[in-house]
Image (cartoon, rainbow, N blue to C red; front, side, top):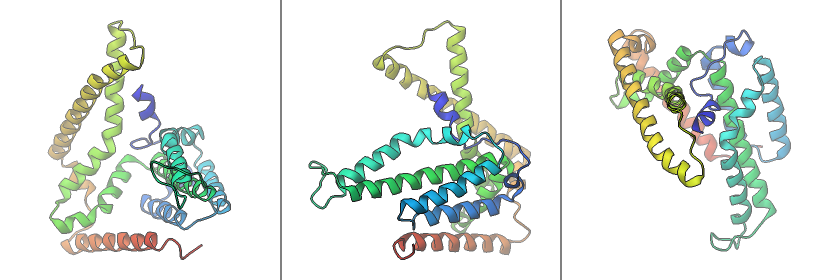
Length: 267
């Protein structure tokens, strides 16, 4: 059930390879993909999205990874994209409301643009995680959260936070596999019908989340004892470097926010 859904999420998954994307530094990949994602908010035509999609397709082919991985990553957002398109199509009209929806082609166009941005960001995220080693992705996540140090958060806390967030989906996937193997060993039939599946899912989800949190806590204690987290947070020697990284991250976030607020000036 949920296992197939989690298998389609790229977070925590890495496929080894020797492509140029695999050899590119994670920071440059993240900067480039973030710039493309921000640029998608300035695009207002289907042609521009088509050109951007073709460029992304070339990058995915250049990664030398199975293309089905990218198509599968879009499945979890299918319903959300469809809901976005329909919502804009029936509510964007001047006289439309929640209780009196009216269809408009302009709303359909706007909803399609937002759905395209959602798909584009999902594919960029998938491409990043599939071509970036876990240790490098975790180190980059810690550097990206550098502004939190200005509010008193320690490096070790940031390291554990990023590591647990990165490993949460694989932990959930492992718990689901253990539940499936347990049901198979006991010869328990799968639940039939919507009501029985809902009842079985409630108890299963509790077990899954409790088990995943327990494994995450165990992993955090192990990392703390082995001082692995401190190695990930080594951004350089000296407090001035850490403060400079924090202010640079805040500046980048402010610039990105200003660009998003100014989304109707360009293109």
